[in-house]
Image (cartoon, rainbow, N blue to C red; front, top):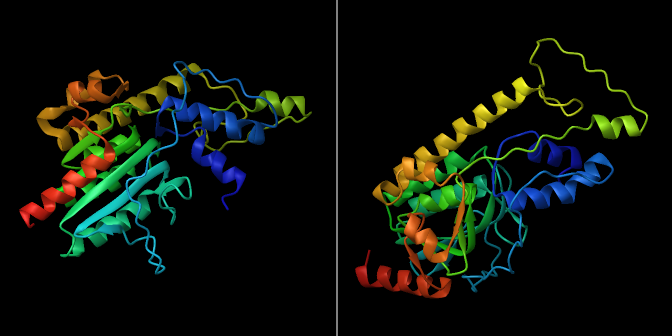
Length: 298
């Protein structure tokens, strides 16, 4: 089990490639446990999170195969990108609520090295997650896409970090009610000084180096620190758009990706923008891809 301080370190005061709705849920769920009271959250445009996701793969191995082994449907492999995305760990898919880039990468390596696997389906339903590890994971998938046919099939959402991974596939399919996009970065700075004061605690911060551990959790963020943080996040957004533009090519250029201003688009609108390639039921898209691989004999 991950300790609460470690969760706080991973989710607060650090840039995240995460949709705003998911950020709101995380802040409301963990904020009171970390701060000991209610949390005021300044987020705009937060709505309903949607319904329970569909599942593409109904076939489960019962032979104790490892987490690094992707699911197989004949000559087609299936890798799940589900729930919150973290850098490291053995978490794979919806059963844990977390998918790690490390776990995805391990499965990608197996797909690349197994000649009996002719194509790859990446099943995506995620609002995004950590920046650390995401770009390397997406690049590994992109390199595989140059080697074998790949398709990202959204069962609901592919936002932020999850969209970056999906964009590394040769094509992306979305259901009519699914959402894609959020090509941006978000960060939640937590000022715990008020909570500490209410508990009768005074925190004295000692620093060797003027910028050591700034902005810190026991002090308000200065205007200079705010500007520096925004500049760093904007640089990450540009890097995000660069990668998407390279993966999607003329379908969604770097400038087009930046022009979305991290908006999310539903179904056919996502196709019109160039974020995805077609609208279809996930099950139909899966069946069509398997049939295509069989017909091509790749």
